[in-house]
Length: 453
Image 1 (tube, rainbow, N blue to C red):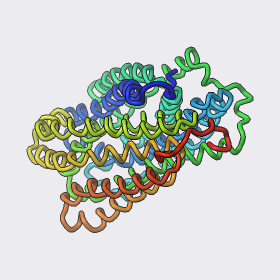
Image 2: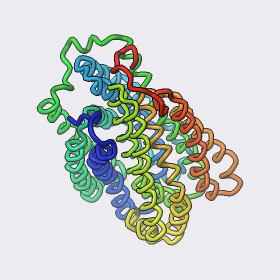
Image 3: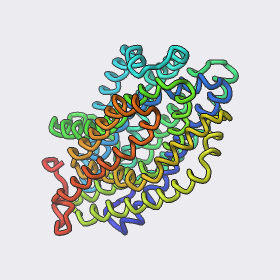
């Protein structure tokens, strides 16, 4: 357990973030192993089929991830308030609400899979491969959710080290299973999906075992499942707000993917490659956001508003340091990254992906503010501005897909995100400076009670 309410905020954020960052890097290995092996062994069309469904994957799975993260933030606030009984009630509620939501999403996404693929304009040349890959991923989303619940709960009590270790084991297993299913069993792109789910299942088993042996403070008894409706309502509002925040962003990407899928297989593959690289470089921003959210949640629960505010600033500074590293890396090495990710030497794909990366990365200073503030505001229970900022992103991507992309092609896709990030930053800055607990004259409050959650 790590109490984030005591000690220097910058040091605590870094110590919290390092294992989380390494864990996210290894989680990226799931996708990178799939991408590299699919591209090199199965070819360009198979690579494009995985890329064409990535936005659908993140839209659905992203909502579940946001939901469980939101649940974990409520747990973090009660942990900061030193309310052990409420911590266990939030764990019980997380299990009930999480599994019920996963069941509904799994059934709905599989029933409407064909209309969803048609809606994002997946071409006939890659349709079968795309459906076989995403169908397996969506059918197994409960496995992904289980890991997200376990990791979110461990983060809520300050433990980011053991999820890292479990992810390392899982990532290594994923690479081996990719080779087994694709190269030996000849299972095609579906084999990559099976490998991902099985390796995630391994991490789930390890997480559950560890919680039962080392984090007994998170283990609810039968009485904790009789949690108050008010707690369940608060948790679902918090979780749904976080999930909606994630899914609005991903729905916007999904809509934009529909426009990209009209530009042909080479452009789809190019965008898939540049997005994979972008996701790697954006991972630290998400980590600093998660660290800020948990730091803010625990200190808000303890009534230490000055520390909450300091956490916002320090996490933003960390994100700006990473922005400098990202800009330099992509301007110097973008073509190298693209060849490593895809295993291909198609010059059109390399040139277009490099152009995308070099245009976007200078705006990572804005993106860092967006991600830190959006997550940290959720951490203190301020749900409106993060959701509004995500709605702004959705609206911007809809406009790009309907107006800009048809007019100026893929260039419209490239310039859309930086413009949207700027508007999102304005919304979130407004939310930060109008939050009474985060003003400079704010005094420490009482520890969190259910009525204030």
